Amino acid sequence: MVKPDKLPQGSELVSKVHQTDFCDALTFVISEEGMSPAQVYVAIFGQLPSFVQQLMSVRNRIVKPFGFKVQDVQILQSVESFKTSEGEGLYQVQHMDEQEIICSSEEQHMQVWLSVFKHSECQFTVSTMVATRSTLGKYYLKAVIPFHKVVAMASVRAMLKTPNAKQEQGS
Image (cartoon, rainbow, N blue to C red; front, side, top):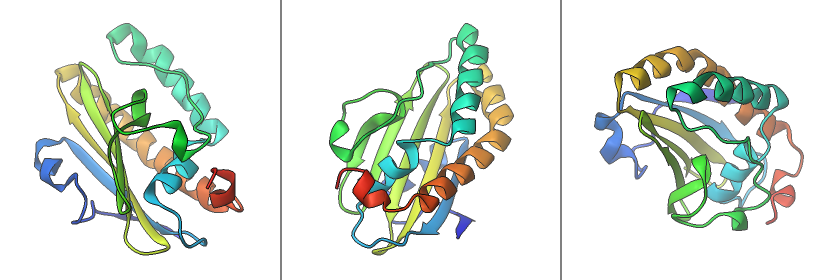
């Protein structure tokens, strides 16, 4: 079961939340014990549902002329495929430990942070935070929030339906 929630109080992002324009979170329970936040991050964002990939392609075509950063929908094969302060887009790791991974993307119109926070062996929260930097960024954020909510929920649910996600993600 996936349920809307708040940014976990133990998250490294708590100190930034008052400087942001948007923050939401989804809490869920996985069936496998022993997964790290990084493994769960890869399980969620490593292979997005096909309709999400299609939406991202449409988004990229629409926003590119306005100066928004666009990138191909990448597939992460394993946790080892990215390291702290390296990577592109939402695979640029800012923080990673046994309790949380935070990845971010920064551009002229906004900065986005994604976090996977581990509460217990099987309970996690994925959080999204956005700080806008321009009027265009604010309008864009308002326009995409409804899509974001659908995409986030669908991505977590797809990960939960994947059998043996831990083994498939290179652990």
